[in-house]
Amino acid sequence: MAQGTPEDAVAFLRHQHDEIRELFAAVEGETGQSRRDAFEPLVRLLAVHETAEEMVIYPAIRSSGGEGRRIADARTEEEDHAKKVLTDLEKLDPGSAEFEEMFGPFRAAVESHAENEEREAFPLLEQTTDEEQLRRMASALMVAEGIAPTHPHKAAPESAIGNLLVGPFVGMVDRVRDALRDATR
Ligand SMILES: [Fe+2]
Image (cartoon, rainbow, N blue to C red):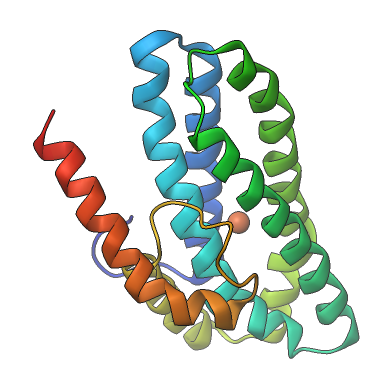
């Protein structure tokens, strides 16, 4: 997560998309333990990024009108699908053939989801939101990412409200799990 005063929400999210692309390339380019090491931060970043977008960005896009609703529905559907696949991927050994088989299509789907956001959702948000609001949204995204679950939760309700309700509790459970894992390395 970016430190200090965040730029506007769209710059913040575009920057995270670039980080996600780099991590995808790292996972595909590595094998064995190096691949595992690259996969962990990818899972964490995808989980908090998608939840924060669902909590902060899509409600604003949806409330901007018919076109906003269409875009928000399409992108949310893609996110729900990605969350399910990521939950399945997390159960596999990143060194296994099964992981390899699932990972390529997953990467393609998430990258095309990010491109769709950059092409339609973000420009619409910039058109319908003033600069001050975009800065406030960047702060809200940072807070949301601070309490969001750090792993995908397939069983969690698939909506912004659902993520908001389960986020803090599930997020705390995830943070304890991460701290334990890091402590036992
Ligand atoms: Fe995104």
